[in-house]
Image (cartoon, rainbow, N blue to C red; front, side, top):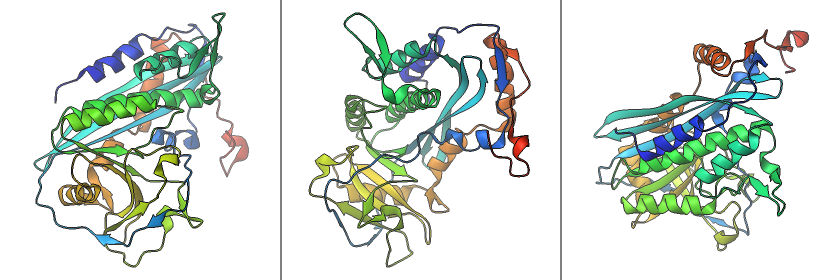
Length: 352
């Protein structure tokens, strides 16, 4: 798989970030609770159903004769340490492809970036520019004063904006690698205006359709409810693989708006259910679901391709230690003893 322009844009973004003050102290993160699953990203979406939707009866997957290629994308980020005026984060991503039952992997990163109050505006403007709207996170007044929007003030928020930017670029790269297949996103197919412009996602959809590809987003968590019950916990008549479509007469008012048909899907016998958004090319959304089920390997009730993408986006402990050493060297920081106060709360080890 050749490196596309999206990888070059990501490289350019990280290379173009200005250096912060050198010689500052660097406190590496070591506490277990700080490192576990931080690569998951933003987590649960803010979702609101506009009216009273209906839930279709469960349907079993139907056999599909179409043999197609699949590509899955995932990214992860983690804060590896802090300085006197900021934090150092690492970002990585993976694009995993399935061609004729063979797998191909293309990795991005890990990349390091030192965020401080001095360069935060430049970082956010760079992300906005890469997503097609430079003023998305930073507003400029008539007198030239720049202010950061409320949703991106904290370093944790900036960290997720960077991770999201990398993931969106990798998604567009993945689209260009196959024709007539399915691109798997980790999460919903929604225009979340707090981190991605609607126009960027519309462009992503058009790029997919130009290649004859369909988009499928699989979310492990959701806030959507029907009758006061989270859609992932709705009772079912069978524990076999099946799906149910959520039908609403006023999807246009859904926030954040979905770019696909929304299903609740169980991919494996007795497995968990997932919110699954399907944005199909030409054929009905149900047909795309059936093609996915027939062509994807399902492991413990979850598409194995997405699992592989996740595995290659998670940071291991040895990798984190290596990145901390690199960060101290590259940014001219003075390595200090970790500020781990969890020992105060032993044996519960919580409190950082």
